[in-house]
Image (cartoon, rainbow, N blue to C red; front, side, top):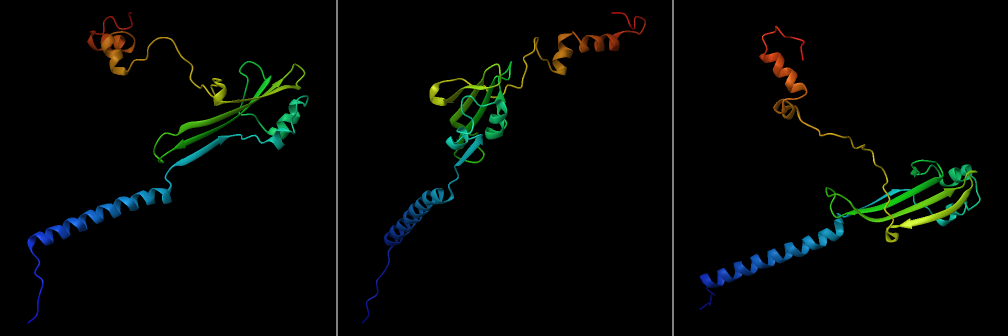
Length: 177
């Protein structure tokens, strides 16, 4: 006489729950490891990174030409005169490729020249110094307000006023304002 084990509905339900739980745990753990392996975060270095060896080639007392030869063209110069060269480097990070990068570190090397074009001072500013540095400002604010075409039509001045006058006039006073 052979003994056979019978599986009841409760046993099958328990096995399916255990299998489902193990599958969820394995998927979750493999997802965590995949993020480490793929490393979707991105670090972006921009600008001119100055090392000490290159900086030693342009000490205080060197000429403007020597600075340009050793450090290269500056990122920007002073707004009103060419008495300061700025070499700017930034480090930005973003966790995923489609997100906007966040500024993590910024370094500004300022080379100050005297009236004769000789380096008078070298200064190094970082984010910890608290110096506000506007790298590029390409917009010029203008007076007045900017209106859309529909807004001009509804306001009754400018283009809308002349268009309405030309549409609704009988033509006898064409050209009068």
